[in-house]
Length: 398
Image 1 (tube, rainbow, N blue to C red):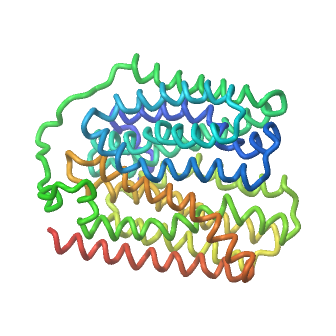
Image 2 (cartoon, rainbow, N blue to C red):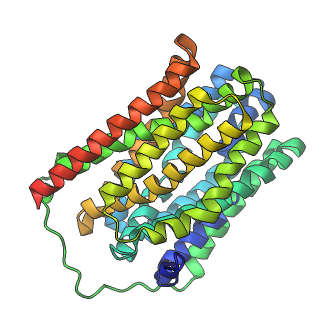
């Protein structure tokens, strides 16, 4: 079986939205260097610099379900254009603001407009791909994001040595370029024949948060949170563990994380194409347990070889879990409310972005690194339990 075969059959629109995401992500650098900008250029403390990022995460968390619902009302492409043009404007203005409290406010507002792209794009992919193609479609989208993210931070590191203002200008330029791309390309938008609107019991309710009354979806969100907190340790406590506890250099850690990036770029797309036909729940089970084993095995990591092995294991978990989770969320969502449901799905990752550093460093500092890595395995088991409950709830509702 050729694992790349399923990629050729992906709709044109999936490729177009992936290209737009690649353009946008290739300039992602401000959010990555924001704490350094605030601490070095504005000469603020590390705590006050960290608060900027926390406020950004808070804005993304609060706004996710609202912008998801907005995409259902005005259309995903229109909202993505608004998000990209708006982000370009905010980033340009950002470079001229030097007052700390104005930057706090601007970061909050920027996160709302910038993160509106995510649920809209996830909803668009859900609507433009069939159930059989969806996992591969999300994998292609993640490939575009990871390719872009492998470019942006590298360029940002060089530009930051020259002037931090350049980060804002280049990031704004790529947002603007992606928005123009969305405007000029020819979309193959048409009503798909034979697709009927799903009737779901939550549609009978009028409350804004009625999506959460769908038990299958609620359990799914609860499943996604613990394992996302585990995965986010790769950006918070893992560098502390490798550099401070195991005494490896910063450059060594950078090379270790490059293993993750290279695997995703080379393997994730064909891997998910080869898993077409798997039940969503089975993909999640496998992705979660590999993530738990990979991070849990860091207890035994004292050499480069073992560290690489653990990274390979949890990277395979990441490559299987995230496309599978996006697919499961879109399958649960009613046809005319995918943006709203994807907004809640995105909200979980915004929450994990805020919680993971504090949960991880608390266990790391108050107990030990061993306790932290043991806890990551336990968190993964909790996620698996909620996947099971979600599966059972889906069976009740069918």
